[in-house]
Length: 382
Ligand SMILES: NC(=O)c1ccc[n+]([C@@H]2O[C@H](COP(=O)([O-])OP(=O)(O)OC[C@H]3O[C@@H](n4cnc5c(N)ncnc54)[C@H](O)[C@@H]3O)[C@@H](O)[C@H]2O)c1
Ligand SMILES: O=C(O)[C@H](O)[C@H](O)COP(=O)(O)O
Image (cartoon, rainbow, N blue to C red; front, top):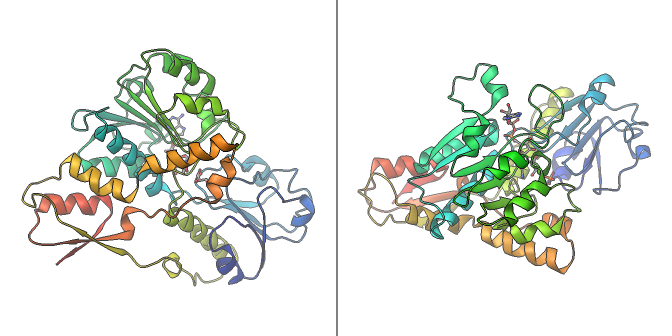
């Protein structure tokens, strides 16, 4: 097997060398001639794969992206050229869901919202939207879902219209960037939807910048009273319009899915796709490359109650992932010069809740145990 992989794919060397001849390329430095003898190409979202790039790729059998989003792949072209393609759907759903939970907990700590009174409107009930809904259930936070494609396909969950989502206290977008089909998402959230937002609402976009009319958002955020907005994704990354940052509560540089586990799961899924295509056994697992779960002593203030208070949950979960740290570093790097790519490349080590084993002492209520398990923790009773 002749494999070419983007160097930002974690552990790409170990995974792909186990399958055949593997070499890497730096993001932005790939030219058509590099693909002349390549059979398997692995990328992340930072490499656009289209007819122009593949003009000399006569041996190419498969393109796989170690990401959930696929808008950087020209799928109609790949299919017309008989080149198989795969994505890593679901690889980073936990990371993005925990990113949104971090925002909600910060908003609660800063008295912007009352978590027992709000409803979160989730647009897109796929891997990320569903994972987020499960975390919200564990936290006892209400939510509603919008996903016309799934609703039409017979998904039995309850769905609401986009108008109802836009009236929710929190709106969180988890849809792909698409221009075609029955439900395209390009500019889905436009001036009309944004005009209806009021000051008590919190608007979050951690999917793709292009699903929101960014200019309309900037205008809405400058009209007082303005809603609160948090963006992880922007139009024209990495050359984003930095003027928008001034109007955002939190801003981060497309790292919502960048937990260690989220990125490694992406590599694992691409590796497994290559194994399947080449009829080779799956010999490597992501646990081979992950540090063992970390013990974390946790004593609930009142272990007999059925649910932890939001204050206690905030202390626990923000101790693991606090979006404010990413916001601070991102703004600092963007202020010095536009270091969007550098921020992403040097992103800190961030682990998911499931990387922690909570060590509980004494008898703890069933409700608390269910909550902690629902959040993804492994529990150990001392
Ligand atoms: N910021 C990040 O780091 C990050 C990480 C992961 C994913 N993403 C983005 O988030 C998107 C969603 O990720 P996912 O893994 O949940 O994908 P997914 O394919 O599992 O789910 C997407 C859902 O959106 C629904 N959908 C499509 N068009 C819609 C529309 N017009 N209105 C409402 N729903 C619609 C689909 O039916 C599907 O259920 C990805 O495509 C990617 O672009 C960003
Ligand atoms: O689509 C995805 O999976 C995410 O947007 C992912 O975080 C993109 O990461 P990148 O490949 O740009 O590092």
